[in-house]
Length: 98
Image: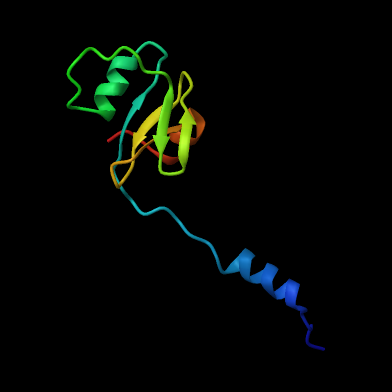
């Protein structure tokens, strides 16, 4: 006898089986934040900055709002020129040096 699925079982099955994606290959730029390289981070994010810019306050304005960067995080320049912090474990799972 053929199994009858209710509405929620169909939705769950579709979400589980029909919504899988993989990341497209893309090169990104990133700098690891060491806690001591605030000037490097600011120059990475704002190449035209004129002074030494030692006042990196670990807050990054992203497309989703403000995010805090912690020591060890990678500051990534996204595909549209946006910046955001990424935890090192996620960064190393997703990216490799070219």
